[in-house]
Amino acid sequence: MGKDIVQIFDTTLRDGEQVPGCKLDAEQKLVIAERLDDLGVDVIEAGFPISSPGDFKAVVEISKLVKNATVCGLTRAVKKDIEVAAEALKHAKKPRIHTGIGTSDSHIKHKFNSNRDAIIERAVSAVSYAKTFVEDVEFYAEDAGRTDNDFLARICEAVVQAGATVLNIPDTTGYCLPEEYGAKMKYLKENVKGIEKAILSCHCHNDLGLATANSIAGVINGARQIECTINGIGERAGNTSLEEVVMILRQHPDLNLDTNINSKLLFSTSQMVSQKMGMVVQPNKAIVGANAFAHSSGIHQDGVIKNRETYEIIDPEDVGVNESSIVLTARSGRAALAYRAKIVGYELTKRQLDDVYQEFLKFADVQREISDEDIPRIIGACKLDIES
Ligand code: KIV
Ligand code: ZN
Image 1 (cartoon, rainbow, N blue to C red):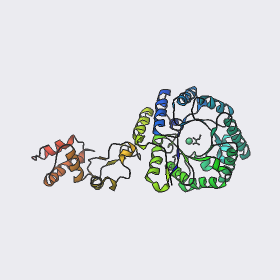
Image 2 (tube, rainbow, N blue to C red; image 1 turned 90 degrees about the vertical axis):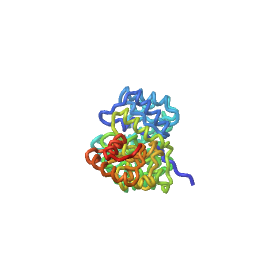
Image 3 (spheres, rainbow, N blue to C red; image 1 turned 135 degrees about the horizontal axis):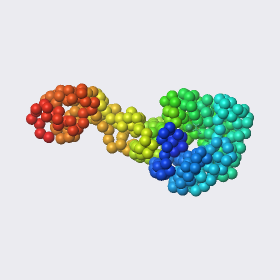
Image 4 (cartoon, protein in one colour; image 1 turned 180 degrees about the vertical axis):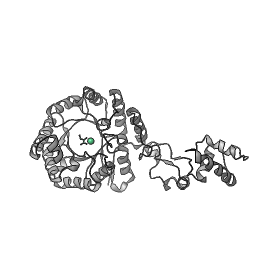
């Protein structure tokens, strides 16, 4: 049986761009949108058209440019927002309006000074109005992570009846545990009448470092879309990281789920977004961090040199990284030193390696990392008769 496809909804240009101090200009957004289309994302959330003239223009231009993906614009459950989004999306081959409202008691009371029935009415009106412009309407229940499941099911049922094609269940505050978020999806799958007409979508924030785990729990329990950003960028602790969820599904064939992403473009896309946003990728970031395929301790290096699979679950080439790296530090062993020495042209005998290794440790104790350029100096300091 073929694998079920989980749609990848990229929101780098909308939720991701809400990172303080990381504004993208229109040209940068277009370059990123084109790359996301090549990467194979199913939906590009291009912006929040009513929020500024710049965002409106970016959504218009992205709609004209994108060839394959659905292009989506965010709105509140407000008529004017929906009209402006529809206008911005009018050139898109596959337009989607993403509308919604806060559904947790906290949002209903503090943001809207309202009540549950009135919120359902507003949600239904927004979806029905959006349907007069486009066929594809996604509804978000903001703060669904802290929304009571019975009420969430009620509002979902009402908007599905009004024609919503996708139900976005955001853990807006990054509050849920994976079990809880997964159970929420299962509950909706089992309790929303008409749910087969819509796709459930995970939209998780990373305030407790659980965005990826929650999204995976969501798809295990029936969701078929994940909303995410390149490098996991986004407000506060960010959103679910696209590269992580894609590679988790690929590394776990037992889940019988996959995406349409060309994973070989993940590393270069991560670098591109990092440069354009002026936001560094933390070195230990899963999949795309500078250290994701770097081995520096002796035991690991010895294993990887014998067989990469001893300490690597992903082939670096699968995510567009040329090869794993063996980094020389004071924690490295003889195998790694011999390996790098050979790369720079020195074939050391066992006796020579013993001597060079002692000298290497002296250097490594003062330097953080030993580069290939240091190796001839270290060998020279041993006064051995070795030819390179
Ligand atoms: O986190 C959130 O709830 C959102 C919605 C606006 C979709 O980003
Ligand atoms: Zn969000």
